[in-house]
Length: 87
Image 1 (tube, rainbow, N blue to C red):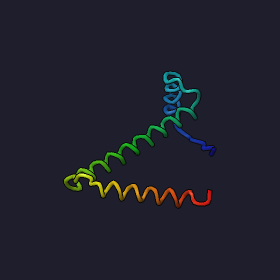
Image 2: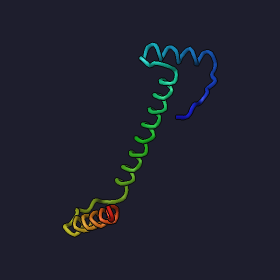
Image 3: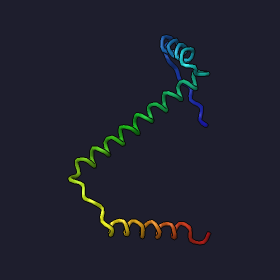
């Protein structure tokens, strides 16, 4: 784990202390970790939404054929065999 020292104005620290008291956080560290986790979750959601929009904009959907499924299965088996060779 890495240690980070953070300097902030007194008004901000008062806000953090209030959030700790009201939000059930055990310390300023726990509150800041929660903020970072929330930011990570927001970023992941934005990334997923962008990918979904890209997929929607990529053109009309085409149905999967038996050949498509067979090809996916072959690739999966080949990859599994490569990754598990010699075990």
